[in-house]
Amino acid sequence: MLNIGLVGAGAAATLGHIPAIGRLQDRGVARLASVCDIDPSRLSAFSPETKVFQDVKEMIKLSRLDLLVISTPPASHADILSEANDAQVDVLCEKPVVLTGAGLSSIDFLRDPACGTALITVLQYRFSRVWIGLERILRSAVASGYDFSIDVEIRRLSTDPRAFSAWRLAVDSGGILADHAVHYLALAHTLGEDLAPVWSRRSRRLPEAVEALISIGERGSLHMRAAYGEPTRSTTLRVSVPRISLSRVWHNSNLFASNGGSARQRTSVPSLSDRNYVNGLYLHLYQELVQGLSSPSWRAAANKRSHDVASVLVAMLAQM
Image 1 (cartoon, rainbow, N blue to C red):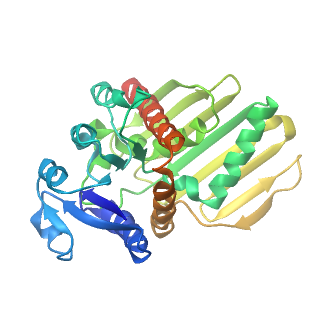
Image 2 (image 1 turned 180 degrees about the vertical axis):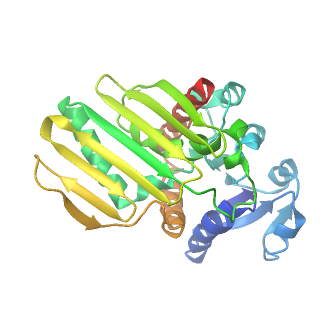
């Protein structure tokens, strides 16, 4: 059984991680062995079987952990990751892993082929069946040598009101770009092409609005727009392959598909703007993790993805 320690008992933990861990515990696969949070009121809700701490160093030292889950604001990630690496404990970390060049340097250990610590970034969107289908289309375009584009538009009134931390609203903490871009950078990363930020800009500071363009190899592009202060909540993901007149537009709970210039067909699908749906994807993330941690190749791929995506995000934020 996998012994899991959780750092940070905020919204991501209570809505995503803890329910998923509970499902695994019901199956006898994993258990929540310990929890750490600086707020003692959040720790009172856990059962006596779960040890509680207010200091992460102490928790790592006194708990026999197989996996440390980091669910704290991103500014704290680098120090906690360093503690976990020193103790050779694998980590599942909420995104974004780091936000600055100094933070990126702190995870350079991931580039060592002999690294004994696995770092898995929370990227639960990739377990959506629609996401998997879009990734398959993009992989086919790359294999065929076709130009392709990924366009993302995210509109939010504000952040999740259930979140304990306001870092997503703070421009100096990465803001809306740091919160959302990682998922789409990871989608581009799966294509095996080099990612390079072309430009990133903030058109409005309060409420924040940002836009960024990333090149994907020689033939692809990722264009992202995200804004707070919008009257409606929506997520739109467009994938286009002009050479074969193929397009997919995933807008909230609708998927519009066009092949070879044919009329668009609409299918009802789950929405990335639906918090309950997105939180439910955590279980798939944990199921893959339980199977993958024993595989050296899976661990190496997870480390590469975490480092590469963090590196591109840091470069994008530096352009703002």
